[in-house]
Structure formats: structure tokens, C-alpha cells
Length: 528
Image (cartoon, rainbow, N blue to C red):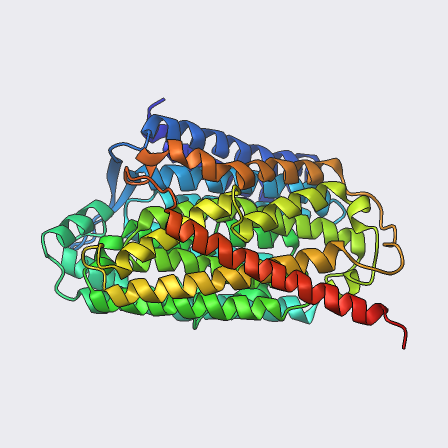
């Protein structure tokens, strides 16, 4: 088969799996799990083949006119560049892991068939966004993800928290989608096409008449979808859904879509210095504010939710300083270790019988009860804290290097103020991230008190998925040195200055948190 044909099958297979799962869920329940796992696995394998064939070189484009509109045509188009190839692999792998994990996590859930079908549809929609070469087709996937998130976050609809969270997620993201839609229309009116290649060509020739207006309208949708300030409030509440859904939304779909969209159309935003400045300020406020919020959370899933918001801030910060390679690198790296963190949190919650870190801190023996989750979560938290040689170190340093270059005026078209804003906020957030990652680890795994109650062992498939995701969480940062062609051809290696600064502030944050924990523990153990 041609590369184009294989690329068409990547989003199509999960979609067909979703349709079949919905049709056969009640009449043939034995087919539900294979229909959930196998299409996602096949899509992941095909995405890898497409990436290998694409090779990170010249983009592959294919299109056919979807319908005559009388004005700006809408094409069923593919645009396969290095970024699309790698992000599709991420989506396929994480979706497969989530589907496998869910077969154990939700094995007794009566609504598992509809859940699995919606996860497949969610996966298909994100893959459509990744591969689409036409903005109207991309919008279809963008909106289907919004619908899927509504149903999946509200999976436990019997609880008022789930109902409120699903409605909030839907309405807040739609609040951003309205100006986003106007931005797409304005962009097509200026460029004369919805095709991404045509729009980039128009930008290169100075064909956009209203770049600032268009960029700001589009940023509203990006802020909603990727949970950036001030439209970030829906994401922590979305933790009311099943834990595997949280992993999917935070790691490979939904929130990644906004960052990926800006990376695809970065020249549009770079055409306006004002838009880059707004993006930089939005990223800085998001990074620092979410890290402070994460330090104050007791629910383990809400800590990770605010962590996601902050890491997305790093990605938008990289885009604000004109480096889409660093942004997508951190998107992929973060996708691996954040999926691991959420799925590991699911195992912890099952073993401890609670989401509360305070309650876990009053239990002992959790690492011995769940050794797989203990070791893999430790790897993922090191990656989150950006400690070398874990994947998060390399990708976060790539963002800081890009901000450093912009702050020194080395990046054409990027205001130096935007560079300084992202650099300072990034370093401060690195300190805070290490602090809340250390706090989470200490409270969850170094508790004192009665032994953890026996809630039964986790299915083998859940622990197996954790180790699969631990590999890229540990090794992807090193592997990226061989993937320069997929990242616009430039190396994403840290400089000595940013490596020392970034690692130094992370170590300070972790050590100070550890010292505070030791002091608090000693005071609590002292007899009255």
C-alpha cells in the first residue's frame, strides 16, 4: 500500500472499531474488548509504518475536493510531515495502552462497551486532527473530541461531580471554540483556502491582511482546548471521569490538539508580534499559576491535572518564542510520562482505596503492595521534574534553550520580551514542578501508620501497560538525538547554561520539599 493509503487507515480503523463496538456492545459482548484494543493497536502499528516511510523529510500531501462550496473549497486532504508522523505514533500508542488498561480497570463496569467505543472515537478524532491538511476537516475532529470528552468525563453520571465536570468541560471549551471558528473563517478569507499548505504559502508571501486579529481569535480556541489561562478551569474538574480517560485526555488527545494546531500554523502566529507576546504571557501565567495550584492539592489526580496545565504552558511558551520543534518534542515526551502518571495513579487509588494524598500518608507498605506502580511512577515523576537522563529533562531543556535564544534576540521576528517572559517563568515552574512531584511521591509512598488495606491485586494487564510506558519516559529524550529530521532538521540538545540552571532549580525544589516533609514528620512523631 502507498503511504497515503496507510495514513487514511490510521484514523479510519478506530472509527470503525467505535461503530462496531456500539452496534455489538449489547448483542455480542464477547467482541467488545477485541473491538476496543485491536483497532487502536492496528492504528498504532500503521502510524509507525507511516512515520518510517515519511522519514521526517519533505511533507507528503494528498487531497480530493470534498464538496464544491461556491467560494473557498473544502478538501479532504492529508498533510504528513515529521510532526504529524510522530504525534500520530504517540496517539496510537497511548490509546492502545489506555484501551488495554481499561479492560482490567473497568472489567466489572456495565457501561464498558459504550466507554470503549467512545475512547475509540476519541482516538480517531485526534488522529484526524493530526493528519488533516484542511482546516475544516481538522475542525470536525476538533469538535468530535469535545463531544467525546463530555460523555467520557461524565461516565459516572450517577455522581453530581461527574455531571457537573462534563458540562463544565464542554461549555468552557465551546467558549473558546466560538472565536476559534471566526478565526478560521477570517484566515480562509485572507488566504483564499482552508488548506494548510495554501495558508502557509499565503503567509510567506505576505497575503494575510489581518494577522493579529486572526491569531488572537485562534488563540481563544487553543486556550480552551489546551486548558491555558484563562480557560483552564475545566481540566482539574474533569478528574471526575475514569482514570484511563484522564490519561487519554491529558497525554495524547484533547489538550494536545491546541498545541499541535499552533505548531502546524506557527507562521500565522509569528506574523504578529502582538500575538506572540500574548501567547508568551498566557504561557507564563499558566505555568506558574498551575504549579502553585498543584502544590496545594490533596487529590492525587488533581495534582496531575494541574501538572498537565503547567506542562502545556511549556509547550505554548516554546511556540511563543518561535520553536515548534521544542514544543512538539515536549508534547510527545510529556504524553508518555503523563499517561504513565495517570495510569499509575489509578493503580495507587485502587490499592489505597482513596484519592487523598493525606490519607495515603497515614498508610504504610504501599510500595510493597504495588511494586510495579511504585517503580514506574518514580520514573515518571523524575521525568516530570526534568531530572536527567529522563525524557522530561531533554524536552523541557529544549524549551528553555529556545526561550534563551529569543531573550537574546537571536530568533527572528520574536520579541525579546517574550523570550525573557518564557525563560523566567519556565525556570520558576521547574522549581515548583520538582517540589510538587517530590511532595506527591513522599505522601503516596512514604506514609507512616497502619498497613494499607488489602483491596485485591490489580490485573496483570494494568501493570504491564505501566512498564510499556516507562520505556519512552526514560529513553525518548536520548532517542530524539537520532530524530532531527522529524523536528525541522535542527538538534534539540540542551546547552550547558540551561542544563545547569534547569537541573539546579529542580534539585532545589525537590530538596527543599524533602526537608520540609522530614521536619513535618518529625514534629508529628514527637510526643506531646
